[in-house]
Length: 240
Ligand code: ZN
Image (cartoon, rainbow, N blue to C red; front, side, top):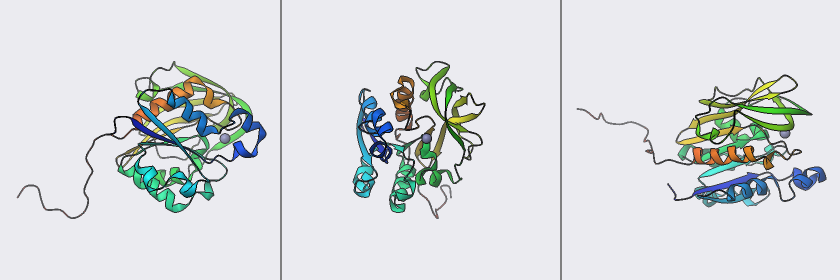
């Protein structure tokens, strides 16, 4: 394991360049906001990558030098090339952590790794979001109170068509009455995956201190560990 955790924050980076409203909140992009928050944390080396870079900024070397990949996408999921999706999936199986944010629920990589539609209910209407911490002993909940008052946000509601999470750390409540499994942990191969719900582009959610804390905690939780690389295929017996 590397001495520092090498983080790559990936963003499709389209809303911020096409919408004055979104650009006013994130003038340098959602990825830059998240990266700046993580750079304030000890033990992390943080870079960024975006959709319109060659190979979406996720070439072989870039991925080999990434311990944890953070993913924000929304309107351009279909433009992410399948070969890059397969490359990311292979790295996750080999141990790279993956943190999927908000509308990344519909990204090719999340659906590929979940194996379900990952569909949900949604509404843009300034619902108030309150996140309940339901596993207070989990490392991703470190330093939080019982709830995170996110404030006005897009609503996501159940059913969220995902596999049953290995650990469900957070549940969101919205004042429209819906609830949502908003902090979901998975393992795929040697890699850990965390889905975290908040972060619609038209709200300043990634400036929220507790949201930043969750992402930083999730980076540390998802970082690769020194577990064995399994071998597969036909084998001789261990005992004769
Ligand atoms: Zn959204």
